Image 1 (cartoon, helix red, strand yellow):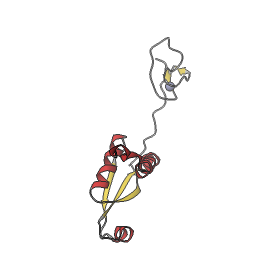
Image 2 (spheres, rainbow, N blue to C red):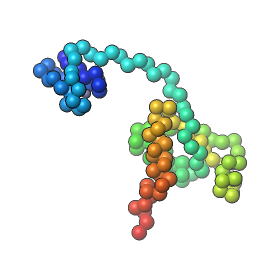
Image 3 (spheres, protein in one colour):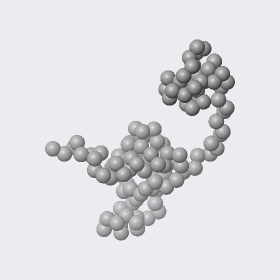
Image 4 (cartoon, rainbow, N blue to C red):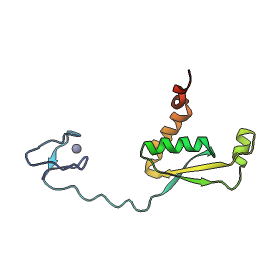
Length: 119
Ligand SMILES: [Zn+2]
């Protein structure tokens, strides 16, 4: 069976180009991807516990990015930032998802995400 090494798709005999990416097909299956090993989590952001963390988690999940909450011991960071004592939550994502998650976070904070709720 022909295979596309670019995207790993398998095709039926007679197909010469990958319909997904247009790459040439080869007779052999692509080599097994190396085991990525244990997922390493990286710090994404700190949000206030409650509404904001729920919204961000939902957005990440919609985009197929698993995230992990890490509750802070105390609220110093958020209390300085917001002038009141709020417990913050650190959100962590896996390293390979970080760039996409960061983009989504910026999108969320730009206000566009909630824009349709007004007027
Ligand atoms: Zn392909």
